Length: 385
Image (cartoon, rainbow, N blue to C red; front, side):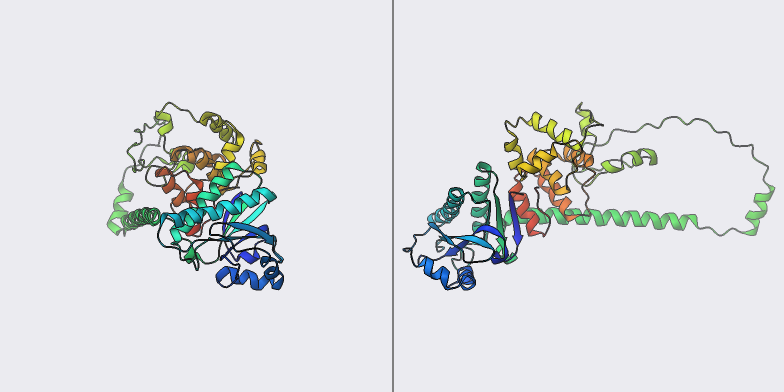
């Protein structure tokens, strides 16, 4: 995928270039800067000595003298004083590094969270600057992979209000699922207790004296009628008879808003039963009015090569790719469920990944970068392909 977040050591990532947050004089005296200089040895020091001191926000390129990459882009982050200009210079660091990436036509670049160490910039501000600048760059450029390398999860801090809201939703889903399981267990216990009955000798004798019954005649049962499912947000559909439940097993409810309800019937839309995942994807792309294919697959964090394969009728996507398509198309929860079914998937309240995706769709959060922040924070697979 064009953008990834990984938990790793920057010096172990194979790429064209890595970013080194340094100070104005390339001193190699702190944090990641020291690790890079220690790994590269005196040859990197000699090359850095050829340059004059850098200004805050500037970036320059040197050879890496490392085994995992060819080049190092050095940049100077601001010291945090809580001023607007500090945020401006932090963004300038990313823009300067990405300008060099374009000039040298690098294909793979690895960033740390610039400013999150000795410069003491708040973690959520550091992450926001990184995500905004990387996303802006990827929407304008192709054929490049950018990796955000997180050495310590304590560095990674999405917006607190976004995390708090998600935690409330996760707690709500857990409580609802626990309540449902308790009701089901109580029903099983009651049914088991009611079915047990000790037969007395008097009952056996009374059964023998009964007159023989006429043979049972089979008749055709009338077709059962069902009431229309509730459309109230957050409500579950009534329990269906076994036959209908078997037919609709894959469209089972998954929580507030319903994973795949029958709202599209009431809206006058008929599902295309013989439509494949690829066909539905292309139909939705046309309906949403994407002018170019690149406008779509960049929003889905999918490479051009992967998108070309996805156009094939027999293509079977991974779940993270299928969900990425739904997010890029800004599908509702019902439409997402329909698209996933065509790829053989569904959303479930027993899977954390699925609940996070459901939450984002219900909140109409279709920014795949923000969604991947939440997924990475909860140690889940990221969207894209």
